[in-house]
Length: 143
Image (cartoon, rainbow, N blue to C red; front, side, top):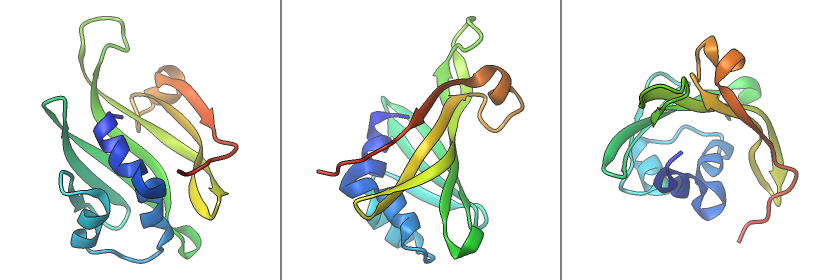
């Protein structure tokens, strides 16, 4: 994930999860105010949120899938096209992202706490050849 969008999503104790923790529908204007004016937001149904942004002079679109079980909203996955060469050949744009397997609450904020990250996100290839990083967050300190 680019540093710029990561900054937007992690400023002020993880803005994205603050947004999801609010457990209410927000207008795109409210979302825009939460995450900064350099990010354009659109939705595709109630479960997909798209953040358009520019990083390193390249325009990209981050897609976040949100699960609505038990009247709570939870980030389920995130994906964007990223420049890379996971096959070891020429560089090209490839779907890159992650799956949130578990959440954790630390100091009153609920954040993704167990994730799998890699290439070919949202395809059959993710599990077999794309995933290359797993992380578990045991504690979070906000400053």
